[in-house]
Length: 100
Image (tube, rainbow, N blue to C red; front, side):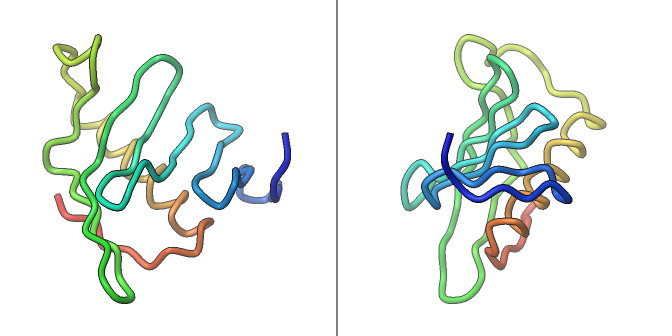
């Protein structure tokens, strides 16, 4: 795999579009309006509003996609996912606001 590696933060950068964490998740840009978060075989899509300077990430409806869409994400797990997203965005040097 190619990309920038940062052992202190446990991330590998992939094509400037996302990161892979040694903790077992990846976070990546899908298009102008969406980011993806993946842990193993579970994926969540996040709606994004990219503005000048700050990117808003909407997490209020955080849920797994097909075929796990009926699996409820417990509040503690949602907090962990949001923390992972925040670490990823900091590593990617993206100014952000999390909207819950």
